[in-house]
Picture (cartoon, one colour):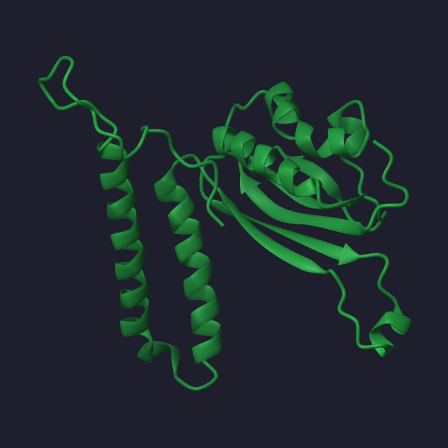
Length: 209
């Protein structure tokens, strides 16, 4: 694909724990949405970032971790790529993790700013993981980190245990609600042909964001 005159420079950033023993060919296919969007014919070719100082798409074999610090030129259609990417990474990830995606408006300049116009810059936070519980754990850890950093400006860290407990309660309730909705899609125990309901289909979500 030719994105030389694209509206955005898109930066993808995140460290994804990968299941030990994952075949490199499987990992290449998991990342196909990215390198194919960049117009490459393989991960080796497409792993290079638009900027030389960024490491690009790299697999740390010693730590079984996919490290992404990669920029590509693109447009709004890149958001569709993210859906497929998250679905693929769910299959090979060993734990929940976050992916940060930043869209930088390449057509916005100082003159636009002087006229009071707004840039189309955007930021998207995505989560992947082997199951909904792992994804929610990653969401919970990020929220606790952000809340503690904010509140430590005014309180000692030892005073924030109650706040963290309340956050944990919220995520526990969300997880219980998710499990209940998935259970509605299962046939009754001991039944053979009973109504399975329409509350869910038993499939886990691709990603939460």
